[in-house]
Structure formats: structure tokens, C-alpha cells
Amino acid sequence: MFDVQSIREDFPILEKGVIYLDSAASSLTPEQVVLKEMEFYREYRANVERGVHRFSRMASEEYEKAHEEIARFIGAPGVENLALLSNTTEGINLVANSLDWSKEDKIVNTVIEHHSNFITWLRVRQRHGTKLEVVRSTPEGFFDLADFEKAIDDSTKLVAVTHVSNVLGCIVPIKEICEIAHEHGAKMLVDGAQGVPHIHTDVMDSKVDFLAFSGHKMLGPTGSGGLYIAEAELASTEPLCIGGGTIADVSLDDYVLAVPPMKFEAGTPNIAQVIGLGEACRYLNRVGMDNVEKWDLKLANRLIEGLTEIEGVEVYGPKDPRQRVGLATFNIGDMNPHDVALTLDTEYNIAVRSGHHCALPLIKELFNLKEGNARASTYIYNTLEEIDALVSAVEEIARD
Image 1 (cartoon, rainbow, N blue to C red):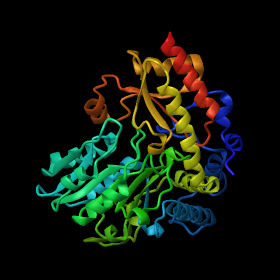
Image 2: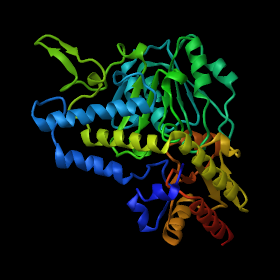
Image 3: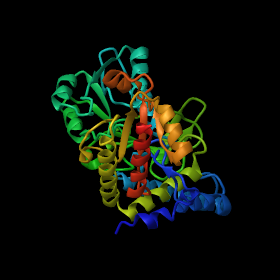
């Protein structure tokens, strides 16, 4: 049974009276995750996989448990398939720097990508002469799979696509795109920054080769995230960094890397953050991702319906809430979106994002918006009454 009021009790920050609608940028963190991080610092503060003393053993045990919890959360077959990194961006860059690129290779990307899953591939093109083809969507964020079938050919090495747009909220059919990629021998990388927090994730079902995600968007700490690596790619995928903790043996002339995931986690890792992310996954599992999706749909329904009915307000992305997560970008007439966000904050105690949302190609190509737009994004701690408060505030601002 989903009880939003009970969930809100786990987020003391909400007692400040702010309506927080910026979870697409970074979610709030429940007390259980905060306390789990504090447990590390208070009870067994030590480095992991290094010492035999009790603090190190306890820290290592909790660190390993977190790997197991996070791997289960995304449906990975084992911890060896999961490199725990700092965020989605690091995961994407690890893949980009690991693959052996040539001028004959092609990367297929889309117009709706976050910069992290776009400029990374522009740099590959600049460095190696690799071809980059960008598939375009409709203004609502819908793709014609025939465009992917046309773009992906036998020279395609990688297809890199977001699961959910951080601007339009639209849900991309990654499973179907992955099938097309694999038919041509291409690898599939998914930017799961917005998808993993909101949609039940099963990497074995989608059959993706790589999935990058961020902990701070799914109730976890900042500085936490991960990269799923499919079994077939484990041996060929190189670490972004090597050093302490990544080796099995070293001589004066050579080194042998440790088995995954250790070979991907160089130096002292973000121990407290990883342990905290493991606790965040436990929290979301207790809530149930099916419940997360259902509540997301209710909030999206109220959000889209409310905003689209206001005269002078333009809402971007799918009109059908079933085709998006609880996220809506909008503009009020000719108002600068930063002014909209500042007014909502100072006069109504509502926190939203404004600007280009690190997705300039989308903003330029699909809408030609000089200043971008405002974005309200929800999560499990938001209520229908908070959405009503936002809609009422936007209506007042638009009327004035």
C-alpha cells in the first residue's frame, strides 16, 4: 500500500515548507539513507578491501552488500557486472574511452540527449574521425523506429540513447532500439539517469550492453552512481582509471587487472556514498517500483492536465501522461523562465528548475527557445495537493 504521507515523514527537509519539484536535477534523500551514511562514519570508518582490522572488515562487508543490493535493483546478474562510479556522466565516459574507435565506425545518438550523452560522442568524433548520426524526434519526443533502422547499419559500433528525456519526460523505447542495434552487431548504451529512478529496470530483459545511472536522482547520495556492463563486454571494457585496488598483480614490467567490479573502481572509492546508495535501493524496493510508477502517473496526470489548461502557458513533451514520467517543462507567455522559477521560489515556496537543462541541441533544434523553459519534476514524496499549488501559482503568474 503506497502512503505518500508516511513517505514524507522520512524526509525532514520537507518540514521547511518548500514544495520541492526539482527531483529530475537531484532528488531529496530519506533519513534512512542519511543515517546509513552516518553509520559508516560513526561505527566503522575505514578503507575497504585493504585491511584486516575489524573496521576495515565491517566497511568492506557493507560496501559489498551495497553492490549486491544495487545490482539486484537494476536486474544485473551479479556484482561483477556493476561498476560503482560517481554518476551517469562518468559511466558514459568510461564506455567512450574504453572502446577502440576508427574512422569507419559510426555512433547513433538522438536529438533529445542530455549533454553527457551527446558531447561525449562529439569528442569521440573529433578525436577519432568516427561518424555520428543523430536521430530526430517529434516535438513531443516520439521516435519513428524506422529512423533507427535507417540510421543503424553494419558500420555502427554504438547506439547511445536516453531512457527518459530530462526535458520532455518522454519514455524512449530502448528495448526495441536495442534489438535493431544488435541485429547489426552494434552495442547499446542507455543513459538511465531519469529512467532508473522512475521505471522498473531490468537490464537482462532489455538486453542493453551498458546502462549508466546516478544515485543522487534516486534518493541516494551525491557522488554515487553506476555502470552496468553486460557479460559479453566485461573482458573488453577498460577502466577509466587504474591504480590502487584495480590490480591482481604488478611487476616492474607489467600489471594484471583485478576481476570486475574491482578493476573499474580505482583508488579509495566513495565508500559512504555507495553504502548510502545501497540503502536507497532498499528503500525504493520497500516502496515497490510498481507503486513508484503508479504514483508517478497520478502526479503526471495532474501536472499535465493542470498546466495545459492555463491560458498563455505552453507545455512541452507528450500530452498523454502515460507516455512520460512526472516531469513537465513549460513557459509562461514571453516571461524569462528564470524569472518564472525565481517567482515560484520567492513568492510561492515552490522549487523548480529553469534554463536549457543541459540539453541545448533539443532546446535549439525542436523549439528554438533562447532561454529554455521552466521544469517541474516530481518524485514519491510529492502530493497531488502540491501539484495543485504549482498549477494555481502558475495560473496567477500567467494572469498577472
